[in-house]
Length: 233
Ligand code: ADP
View (cartoon, rainbow, N blue to C red):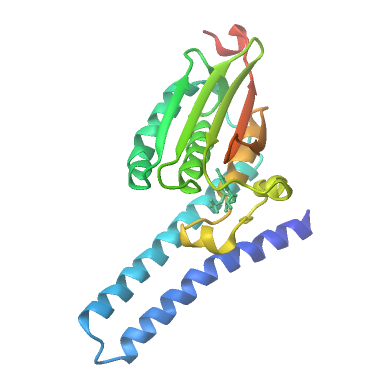
């Protein structure tokens, strides 16, 4: 609706305004302080770089969302979720190693869904990245891919900080962050899970969030398993 659209534009502008204001402030400090020592200046320039990174990530996510929103039905193809998950893991392992988070996975063969590789990649990457990002040092992440008679399930379980029960339904809303300060510090825009949600729904799937035992969060994505006529395999 028009009201939602206006809210979205206002939230998006705010999201872009904050890093731009920081960049403005940092450059002004450098320009106005002729005697700034080199190490402070380097620190300020590096902060400018981080803010630019944040802007880049946010604009990329906004573009992903607008692509999912444009209503154009893309041609679905059979996508092997195991292959896509392994590709995403390849990029995520260094991030996990840096945070001292261990990744385990149990990925069944033959988990094919009708979707696009890009959308499945966004789903798997964003969920697994969050499971690492909102974890604790020494924690772990379990990724499971399994096929039932009629469904294909992708599950992420982490031993991280968890999401309070009353916040769980909100996390799929655009720009929603549970801990505003903490996720801003980690570069979060609050857009990742809304991209995941929209991509899952677009391909006929569902996503749920719950608590992991003894601690942390579990996300379960369920897709209908296509017939061999649909996949042509
Ligand atoms: P962000 O870019 O902030 O990570 P997301 O849309 O991906 O945005 O997630 C929304 C919010 O949900 C995050 O800011 C975080 O507070 C919370 N969140 C997402 N995944 C997890 C998780 N695995 N464990 C704990 N909190 C999470």
